[in-house]
Image (tube, rainbow, N blue to C red; front, side):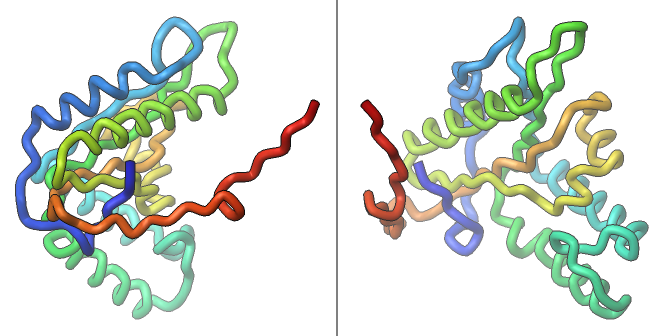
Length: 200
């Protein structure tokens, strides 16, 4: 599987049945407990725009306290420069995206609770399954975006996604189209990408 970013996206719609296939693959990820700790909210074109406008509205109200662009801080003019660029991305960078899939970790309730890190890890495994399944479709471009962190973790986002108080949004799985012949530029070297210690 590989991540394909917006610069390689093309203006071609991804069919909903492809998303259903990816979500079915996610269902087979490992987890502890009586139910899986993941929930996905599939945003189509209109819902994506709504979510992005909500993100901007959140920063308009809170940029002086939380900053923007991952915590960057500065003057009002600097904020509005970033805001204009981000608003333009709705139809620019994100305009060729077919779906954004919100990745939500459902926090288990009850007296005996599984550690939160295990539920986050299981949710990540489900996303990995989606990403692997995506490789079965030539010309499909996907990657996991952490999104704008302060807005992602806000009560506004929780309300938008219908989350409970202890659930966590872990970002969005971006789904678009790309050239089926897009060159894979990834490299892996045992010396730098494999850290293993063997002990007898």
